[in-house]
Structures are given as structure tokens and as C-alpha cells.
Amino acid sequence: MGEAAAINSAAPVGVYITRPEFSERMSALTSNVRQVENDVVNIKSKQDTQQETLNKILDVVQKQGSFKNSLIAGFSGLGGGIAAGTVYLLHWLTQ
Image (tube, rainbow, N blue to C red; front, side, top):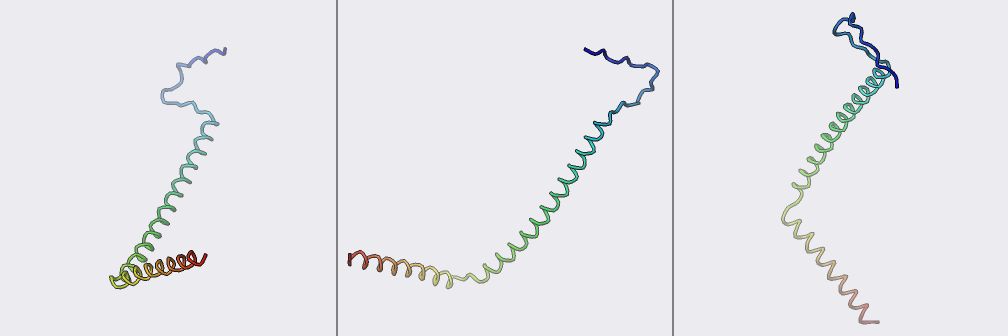
């Protein structure tokens, strides 16, 4: 085992011993954090833009959707189901 280096009592207080590999890792980490922060800002702005677009689409759909249109769509679906059932029944009867 190596011996611990003796601390020189003549060294002024507040002088920090740094190692270059730690500062390189720290600067790399800091740059990675900055990149992540930039990505988050970009994602947030894109989400805000998409939310605005969706709100506009929803407004248009709500303006177009009336009770009359809902009834027409519902009964046309019901009519399609009845027609499909009739065709299936006729096919089953002719077998």
C-alpha cells in the first residue's frame, strides 16, 4: 500500500488541489447537461406548437359537429349494420 502524502503546513488555506482528469470529466458532464437542457427546451416548444394545432383542430371539429350531423352519422352506421346483417342472413339461408 502506498503511503499518504504529507500535508505541507506551509501551504496557504484555500488552495485546492485539482487533477486534470476530474476537470475534463466535469466539463464533459457540464456540456452534456447543457445539451440535455437545450433538448428539453426544444421538446417543450414543439409540444406547445402541437398543442396549439390540436386546439385549433378541436375548435373546428366542435363547430362542425351539430346534433343533426351526429344523428345522421349514427343512423347511417346503424343502417350499414342492418344491411350487413341482411346480406349475412341471406348468405346463410342460401347455403
